[in-house]
Length: 481
Image (cartoon, rainbow, N blue to C red):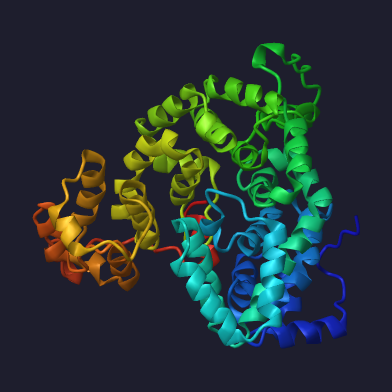
């Protein structure tokens, strides 16, 4: 591996290219790359310049190798590796919602981008509008919607190409990235590299066989606890610290993030991984038990053993709840919370997870402002079927809704008036021919409109408030993964 420390002189031609590809702030990229491992502000600024789908994303494929080199370099402090890894995750999974519940086909993606680049932009936009309107489900609807939004810009086709090139550039570095799954320094402590690299690798299904093999080798995942060798007594403080962090001898308990990755990448016929997940489900670690149960559902879909479904439901009933348990094992990508991504992913099991998803849904509709339209659409699809132009308001007025449908509609009806100002949310209701006005909707489902919250205290009556995390990538990183 040709690792760098981020302090080497930059190639001037490459610098000029980066500046031209990222018109707003591109000239800062070399300096930010030099500091990205050790500076939160450099990380946040670099993300804002090259994030998808901004015009500066065209520069992203050209800095992937540098970010991987910094993350894997022996000269990068262990506690700093997470920064370049977190940026790589944001680049690979910017629109994580259209990656669940089913993987994206790489060959089809390549063909689609080649078509978009080689055709007239207006023709491409028109085709995306058709694909969006004809999408068979919410996942494909949002994928096409996101593509159309990119194509609305003058550089849309180039940005779509850069997204694909970034993915393939990261894919090519998997042999280097998997090294961060090993060793106590990568597996212990806060913001450990093993956790962040697991999140990143989980979004690279085209290298699934290698990644699954490395994850199972990095710990004793495939062995039940009573079959694991007894660790040797530490002979030094360093040995003791390695064992405490789970790195002694290169083995440890699997990280919850690794179980997330196994769920997305392992194959149903991989019996060893299924048995390993069963051991984790039955273990005493609540977080790993929940993560393993979700992973079992993602691997086996409609063939999931009933015990996996039971344990997910049990976890949701604990004091941690679905939100806390998903926060521990799933990443926070873009504006989507771990719980939203988990809710979407459970759709891989179809009707087997219907009750679980309906249990999770009301809390998301009420509590996830940025994802409200997304989860509302998935919830309506769950109980009413796919969005369709054939539905009419009269049909809703005459319908005899079942309990599950009412659960979703009541969660919507109980939203405060301010939620109805979100045009994307009301457009989602309209796609099912449901009323777009709160009072009309509430009348339809027989619920009194939710009153607005009481007025806030005047400034001189308020206690000092803690400073809020800044917006953007930096705010998300410290607001939960």
